[in-house]
Length: 118
Image (cartoon, rainbow, N blue to C red; front, side):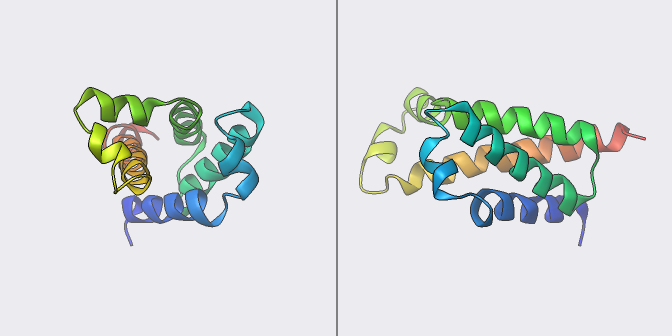
């Protein structure tokens, strides 16, 4: 299995299997649940992919910013997905957009950073 697929598998493990109710329910309100979640998530992605410290740090920061803010909701509002965000597809529509951003971040690391690392 290639490293990108392994990183995507690490994303699923870190975001779903390792995330507790405490993390999911409190990461928007308090930094600590989000920090713990983001450490576990970034570790899962980088360990599955066999990547090092710099990808870990960048993935941690991307994930922390996204999970601590309303970035996903703001994006959906900006591009005209208000009904998608709040209608009958909610909250799963936001989960899908959230995950797509996470996968995009992983892909960007894989495409542009991993090839230039020693």
